[in-house]
Image (cartoon, rainbow, N blue to C red; front, top):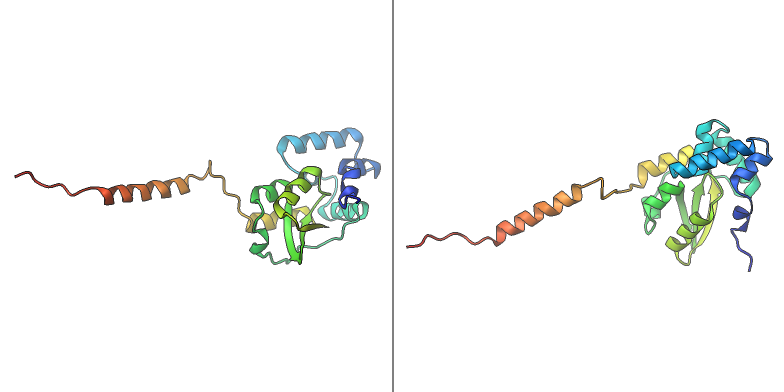
Length: 182
């Protein structure tokens, strides 16, 4: 059975950008290295470099990877769509859950999904089929920021204070009243 995601993995986005004459091989390698160092998707770095507009990148990805375009302007995110998905994975790869239709989960993404993205999503989605739409990267990022919260337990010690406070209250409740010796 052929891999339904093979078309995404055959040609990396940087190769498409080079063959389309949008980047030199050296510049593409530089942007890939920057993306890896920053831990960001290549699409984010390409947009920050000014190589393409968000719409031009979405159109390029849609054409070369045979992906339908899903505009997100005015999109109303249903927070239940993120249930069972790891927020940190969605943010790291800039993948936005769009819908569930029967046994198929749909996602918006700004660039073709890489092997790590596919592995993470198939692991999280279990037996569900996965389908991708391409959308403009800034809209994906904005929707994720607004609706899919990532809690960094190391940076956010608020939960720890909550437990410490509760522990103190329990300890007070267990204390025995002092009695005077007669």
